[in-house]
Amino acid sequence: MRTPVTRERVIAAAADLVDSKGADALVLSQLAETLDVRQSALYKHVDGVDDVHHQLSLLARNLLAEQLRAAAVGLSRDDAVMALADAWRAFVRVHPGLYAITDRYPTAPHPDLVSAVGEVVDVINKVIAGYGLSPDDSEQAAWSLRSALHGFCILESVEGQPAGTDPDRVYRRLVELLCAGIARMSIPAPVIVG
Image (cartoon, rainbow, N blue to C red; front, side):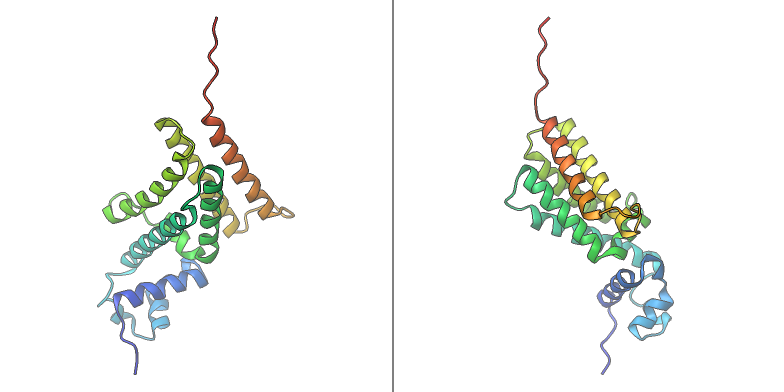
């Protein structure tokens, strides 16, 4: 007896497909073949490839936020940043295609995606809060941390590091530099009496 196709199965199969074959492999004909159904059968469950991209983008962000939150619980300052960074990198390694979809599908016109991005940002902000920064510095530190981790993980996933580079060493140094920079932002500037 064949397992019935549901929207959840379609999205799960799409996630597996992009993680195993890359984001470019997401075409409905390939997805239908994976599920052993006709392509036309997919339209009972999704509104086309854009709908699948949307759902995968939502899934990726929700899973990432969940993983980041779990990693940073009970930790503070550098330990929390390191745990968050390790969780981010691990997520991209396990879900390279799913993560790549987040760059391909815009969030702005979709409240559910904006909310999912907000969850990721919320975790980062909570980690940064341990440094006691001003609101402006905290926002800048969070964006810097997110940008650095995203950039490193994208480069690593496409093997964009120079030949002979030890990615683990570069990664560790990057996170150490981020921690040092964020900690430095928390030190009050000296008052100059003139």
